[in-house]
Length: 337
Image 1 (tube, rainbow, N blue to C red):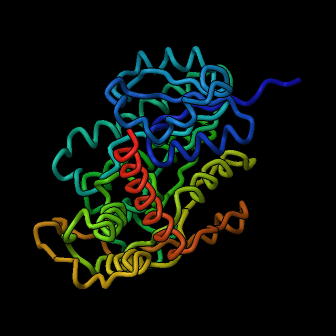
Image 2 (cartoon, rainbow, N blue to C red; image 1 turned 180 degrees about the vertical axis):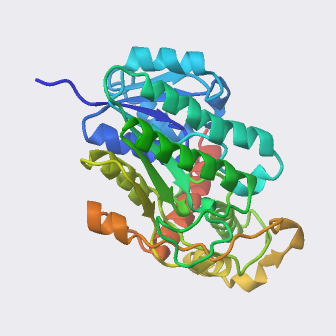
């Protein structure tokens, strides 16, 4: 019997990392995740996998490491010998990148360079996936964007991702490496971090419905995004590494919705008039808002056969219902110690 394929994930404790780990485990992989010692508190997304004695310690392993520490990363590679690497880690909050630009660029740009160099040095060929972002297009010159659209980032995060994305392409062309960029547009889920506007809205709608919060303060309600479901997007990552040739792909729904649309859909789930609860605050608007970011995902549909399965209303409903369930579980736990 052949041994299971081995995958190494950076960012396994994040939204995408947790869904990707589930997907790979379902497909029979042996999954290794790189975690920072400081990420102990945020492992809740993979806690259900760690709690499974059938998985943890056999087909799922975690390794302490940091993208700034090349020595430790090399040690992990030597121990794990991965066939596929999915590089998802890095400070991924666009707004926050204006406050911590240096560490954002160090993690996102230089972290990717370190990994590419390690992959290049492996004796056996390694397939490499890099999580790029629509933020590389920022103030896009055209809409919708394709894989050929010029990069024009509008944030430190976008700049760092553009650097990392170009590097992946350079290493593929220069060294013949199997290295792919997945240029992912916004993708959400109940596992989205609390500092993202979609989760902020879903959580507020649930808390207001349960009488735990009075109002929701937001920035620009007209800001538009191409929002998909993270579960669909991690499948696209895996499909890229199964194709015979490495390439770059845009992963998107091709539809945009405004923050207002998201608010309306979220409050509709709990049957409340959103206008009574939402306040706008100029302080929450970004220094520069990107242009109309919407992806043209024809290439990945035609080449790999990928397409999104979750609709926008389904995504919002799932997020709000998950928040309601979490509140109700908490309430039940306090009533039944």
